[in-house]
Structure formats: C-alpha cells, structure tokens
Length: 294
Image (cartoon, rainbow, N blue to C red; front, top):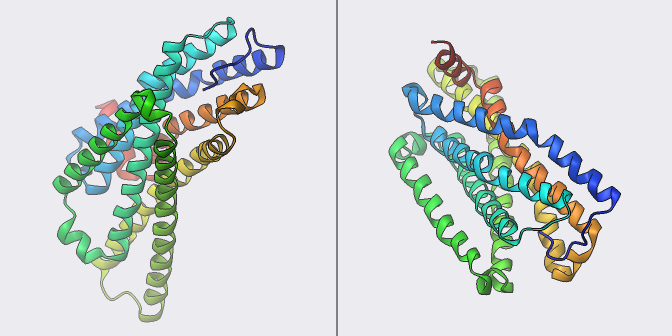
C-alpha cells in the first residue's frame, strides 16, 4: 500500500474508493457463506474425504481468512481513505494479512496442480502412495512452512530488504510456472488417453469410469487454478513493476489506484472457488444440498 498518498482524495480517487466499497459487499458475503458451507460439507461428508479435497480444503481455509480478516481490514482502510484519513496500524495489518493469505493460496494451488499431475500421469503411483492422511499432513506442513516464512514479513528490517522481496517474487513466479507446466502435461496425457481409447476401444469399463472421474476432477481443479492465475497475475506484474521502480513510485496516485483495484481483484478470487466447486462437481453439489435441506 501507498505510504505517502496525498490526502484528502481528489474526485476521481474518491469515486474509485466508493466504487470499490460498493463492489466489495457481495463478494465479501459470498466469500464467508460459500467457503463455510463448502468446508462444512467436506468435513461432514465421508465420501468426499479424498486426497485432492484435502488441498481444496486448505484453499478454502485461506479464502475464509480472506473473508473474515483481510476483507474487513480492506473495507476499513478504504473507508478511512474516503474520510481523508490514514491509519498506519490498520494499513500494516491489512498488508501483512494479505501477504499471508495470498502466499498461502499460491502454495496450495501449486500443491494441487502437482497432485493432479500425479493422479493423471502416474495413476498407479497415485493410488499406491497418495492417501488422505499423507495429503493432510503434507498440506498442514506446507501451511506451517509458509506461516514461518510469512512471519518474517512482520519485521521491517527483513520485509524491506531486497533479498526477501526478490525471494518472494521468485517463489510466486515458480509457483505459477509449476501450475502452467503441470497442467500442460496433464492436457497432453488426457489427449493421449483419448487417442488410445479411440484406437483400441474400451478394454475395461472400470478403467474408463475411473479415468472419466479423474478427468472431471482435473477439469474442475483446472478451472479453479485458471481463475486463480487470472486474479493473481496483475499482482505479480505490480510487484515486479514496483520492485524495479522502487518505493518512490508509490507517491504516484495512479499507481496507488491501480494497486487498490489489483487488491480487489485478488480478494474477489476467494468467492469464486465455492461457486466452481458446486457447479462443476455433482458429488460436492449433492452433498452441500443434503447438508442444507436435511
């Protein structure tokens, strides 16, 4: 966030802040309700206790943190800007909470793409070695590692260091590359499977059903990851731009307004995922419906 924004805001800046406050209401409500419903459905429905759903639950927890912590801080920050005030403690809390939740989402998105890669490209290894408990431990461990790394961002000598910022940007870029490369390999593998079935015919009904289910899950997760990359790519562009130009560019009101919309876009991602889960997975949709209307 900008440290030296000129206050009070001009008319254009005020209009932008008002628009962001109004637009943030519905996504904020959907974030909390949608992710709470989805997480409760996953926990209470035994048939959904699958390795891939463990990581999705991790993403859901990250989205809930956005709904309960980051969004209220964001709305409060915008409201104070509208009133011509800046609260340094509030701005600090928002920046650190956003950093933690965004990084956590990147970690889980990367792990999810790797899980799908093994499931589709190495199905025998997947069924033999990837279990619910192992995936649960892996997800918790990855979340803990990021918590330790993100906690370093709380200390100004570290958070403002060039090395820490470069490491963070490199980690985010690596995560994006892993997601893109693994899903490219998954696409190639699925295409090869379809060609083999067309050439040889279906030799095993069970195998065909299993592959169809894996493709359905992979497609749903692919949509989640695509929306994730779409919402977070402007953040990577912004981080790279400001890393190159230096902190002085925050004095530019245009850059500041751009950063506000970038933050709004990545926060909006937290309300999209539950919609994808319920619309693209009949099992999740049926379990959520039973939970609501039982």
